[in-house]
Length: 236
Length: 293
Image (cartoon, rainbow over all chains, first blue to last red; front, side, top):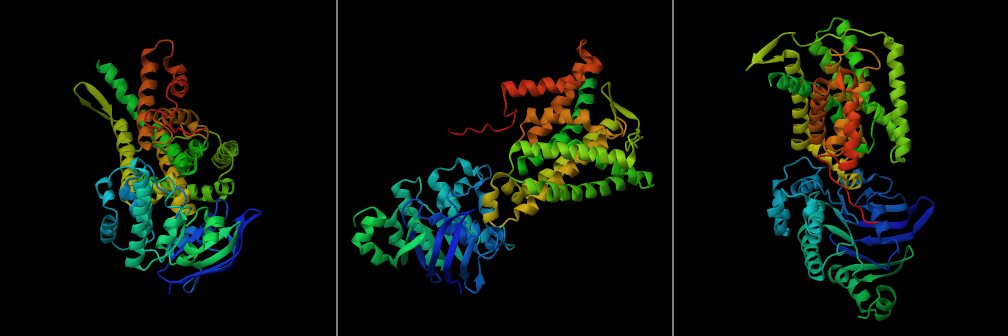
């Protein structure tokens, strides 16, 4: 099935290695939070999973090896990556952005569009509007909606809270949880806001300078006060 | 007054030809961020191919369709072989590559077909018809019709097909386009193929008005640059409007401004380019991009 198994993953840019021997397993339909300070390699990990940077080691999704494939090939295999900065097609309309999310599919999309409007009713009245005219929160919803249009087996979210008001961020995480529960999509979410991410995740890993320094269930990580202080930057 | 309108119609007709070459420039700029100085030469080469087909006894319109198909394939091939290796290189590198392509294509055409001028068959009947005192040549009308059809097809492609949507996605955000599963390399090649096709139309339309020779498109390219600058390099509709405006301005200046006359009117596009760059660098329909320092 769609279990994600990362084993001994090394990745980086040019000569600079960022990830060192990262191994983790995310069960099908689980949410895994990747935490850690700036520059720890969280974004690089997601990029390696979606083919944006090359990696060595092993990344398996179900029966398929993901490493060594291009991002477009991985999208066709059901990997949806909402990148840092959301990756919105600014001059295109909201509806065109959503349709692009399903670019690899050949079937009818009307049902899926309705499903997206169900999750994000705010998008519906703005369908014909340029995506660039949306607010930050709406653009993040659009980015999530675009990813869902792929009907992904693996959903990668990079800092969904970045630049958003706390209230909107909470709403967004609630929706990610709902999507995960309803569609059994495996999710890997990278997040600065550890508290929020741990609130929806089953398990979490803390990255520091490209290595996993701590792994556990979300509850364990949440409870470990020392961990919280040294890695997450706040007291629980 | 009739004389004036007559000149305007004449200007719109030549403007339509500039518009199609300007559109080719804008397409490539949008997809690859490259200002393709070789666009005119590619159009010239396509026109020779059309000439070759008709010289072999093929009916004109069949020759045109075949030429467009060959141009499309040629454009894709050029993207693959010449442009792909320098993708993402600094602008100066890209400019030099397209200037090199210019010289190469020009020389190749001279080598294959010689630099002697050739008569290019005129696909349109010679007559004219009169509306309210205006005489409109079938030639003029034919140019409008062909350019209009090409624009219409492009509009349908970009606005109403999935592949067109994918092409616009690649033009706006290639990284994100790759993440949603679009084969960006193939799409860029398609963009070059499309531009070569649209450019070929301008060559085939302008050849009966001039003579077919390897340097035929030099002047037209300057007008097309003026058109694209005026309309905005990031706006296909702007390129078309720009082409029409440049065509009319050129014709009117040649006819009515004594100091310019028919000999100096090639200066008009240069004045337009300079004026636009000074007053409204993003062009009439372009978007100004503001970046924070």
